[in-house]
Image (cartoon, rainbow, N blue to C red; front, side, top):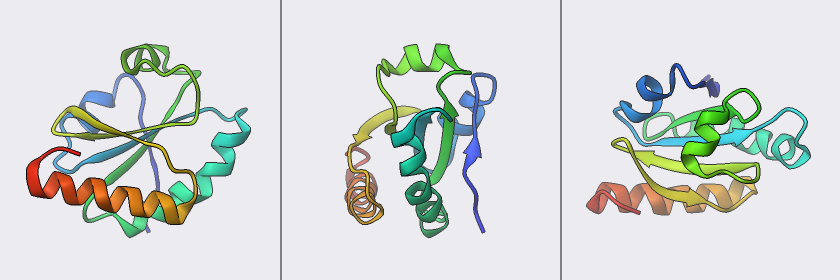
Length: 115
């Protein structure tokens, strides 16, 4: 079973920007109630998409440079990155709606490389 990959400032380029698959990036913090509420949905989706998508989480408190780099002002915040470029921000918060939004975004990437 695939688990979420913890990424930090040191591993971000190798794990996210140089990934051979699109990457869903979850900015979160352990003290954040909405982040913890979203976590089971993200954990459930990771194995469903393991052939099409890498899922990583970034602890916002421990990685301020990445927070600044992505302009994150509130968490949880989800981004979809493909080929080293941010191609979208994922807005939905339930597993079903996240799945629909991810399917649409991944289909668009496959069709034309953008969301």
